[in-house]
Image (cartoon, rainbow, N blue to C red; front, side, top):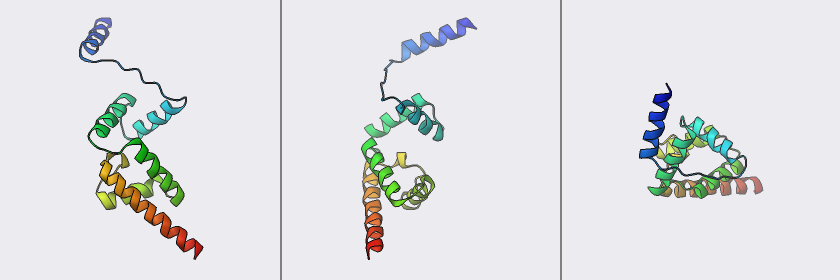
Length: 121
């Protein structure tokens, strides 16, 4: 059995580079929960996000803005997911392109502004 582990470690060493990622205390657990929610390992999720961002997918800044707007609207994760599915035929906010995320943000801002006006008037 030890030979198998040594072989795997050697293959990993020969075919991969290691990068040590430092995040603020508590952030690792948050990222891990998101990864698990998406059915991915922590490493897989981070690699997936790197590829998405490099290909023009949703940025972390856009995701934070979207999360903030959904909180203002009082939406749960399920409501946001249903809205995204209806508008973009995508089931996960992380899979939106940067352009789609920008449109989503503008749409959420419009809904929020309308809700504010309705409450004031």
